[in-house]
Image (cartoon, rainbow, N blue to C red; front, side, top):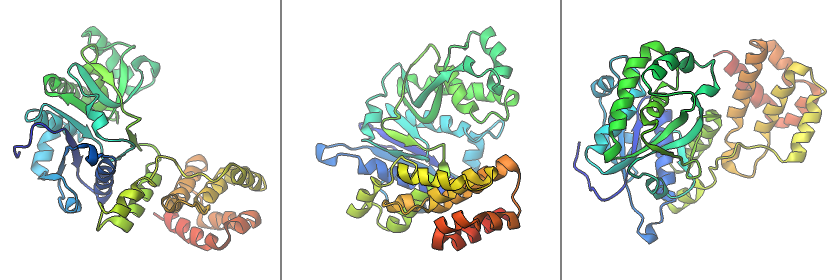
Length: 358
């Protein structure tokens, strides 16, 4: 690793794999810079560890090429890819007094320096503090690990869970990452299919040792409804990808907001009334299609249209089984829905028929 300035906060990204993750990371970085008050002297270093440096060429970041062999080694012994987050942050903290590792599917609402104000000795900054470990007793992590954790006095049902979309620590507390990595290595065979194992092990490692702080007011972590937020970000990149730090690009960052686009209340009531004329199984599907087709004044909300349509079909198929192409055509040609969708109906039909064949 390169020696870096020690006095500035370190914002760290780990981005690899499909282009989508790099798009997310680029927008997250620009949103951090857009909220940075440089006139007040605010500054930070942004480190990107990635298998593809090219997407970051227009950004003021330090890129560290992450080859496949290194990342594979970070994921051993079980090939658990979230393990690399903790390994990376541990290495960064060997060089810097404090650092924040942030997931790519995030964007900032406020200055990123507000994150670092919450990173103090004796504390762990996470994205969000969740419920208690014992609240969901059907969870695999509860059923398979509770007795082990209690026997070793590592955790109990009152332990708060955390969302690790953000992990911020000082160097003095970096040992919590060694502990969390060891727990991942031990528990992965017992909870192989638990998607949240990584952040669960972080919660266990920090329990009774570190105070927890969260930052949902500073960043939006769009782990839910990801398709809609990705659509907004991709629209921003199509418009500003060549000049991501121009005045226009930074102004448009504020339009990529953390709200799912929804029509006004009266419009939604009208959509609901229309859907009542359709078979019960198709009502929610119709409303979601109409939500996506509404002419939102915000151009980045309008960019969510196809994501809404895809989600509508996904929800319908999940509830009632896969809809056949002819059934889909009949639904879209219902007189009320056909009239409401107007000129967009043919585009929606073509899009959904193509999606249904994937």
